[in-house]
Image (cartoon, rainbow, N blue to C red):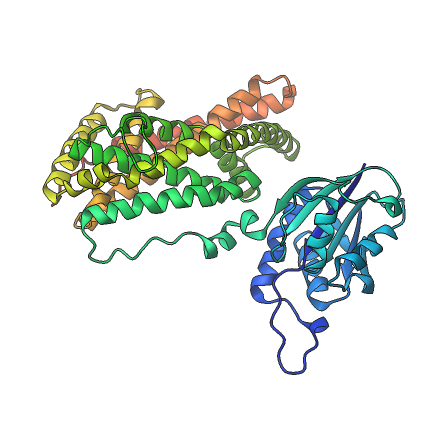
Length: 468
């Protein structure tokens, strides 16, 4: 089986003066695009064979940015700059492809539109008509001579753009929250829910791509905020169950919908924990030898791949799309608008005071011997208080600042618990060697001591004050 990768050059500057098209360099955005695709190519094994690049400046610079991101790969030894790839004709590119040497079993081409998508659609009609700058397509072909490639003979395996691989690049195109200004409470909350829905849907391709973990984090945040706002509004207004929404004759109750949002967010929890832990292992190496740390990372990566595959299957399932569309329609329902209109600062303050009182009771009940779950429940309580406080723009900044500090402290506690849980799972696995087990047990004990210090800091917190 042969593998063919088609990549368009990254964003180039527009020609100026007498500059010929052939000499157009990459723009700054183009350089960021190319850099973002380096690890995509690495993960897709596109750099394990021959790399053919058009002679144009923008394609050569695209390759240079890739090579700069992956210095250990010595990509300069694999690259071939070919004048024949400086073409915008699909037929010319096909003729070039058919002239490839038969020993080339894995080929990456960095070229131009419209030649690339024309060739791609000749190979497989399901491919889209256009390929964005720095976009990538992956095909497999029968293990026959390149000269014998036939139309429709390729299997299309994947397509990815820089905006799906890099969250910073995605942000430029992401849905924007309308300016709130002096918008009344009901409109402001509706805008937030509508924006979060759009963000959830826009983030899905990046989550599925799995290159930049920030997509997963933001996806999770928007799911949880949507649920939290829904719960807060319901607790304040006693929003009724809604059975009719535009274009849908019957939908679940608000309680059921919020439960489903919770389930969707929970489906990301373990994968998010793995991302955070793997990042911690890289940025703040624990007291483990290089060999033990590598074994732990590889063990965690296996679990991460399984969790990511499971999440992708869930997001791609028809029932998921139905749930999301149902939530969008629910938000737009007239009854929801009427319920939001009932929100008043007085009602928000009453619910806020009740939640703060419950937080203070739970905080006072904590001791150094309390189970981890008690500290986790307190963290959730703080988040719920903050979500209610955020509904009212008049909430005191001092209260919001105090809540953020508590969230950070309790979040640190949760992170340590997560590390400890995964280290204990690794210790119990059959993949660990005896000397590695001893190292990990030492680290687990150090994490327990760190937890105890954080427990003391939490217990020492003063009760939250209701400041209005």
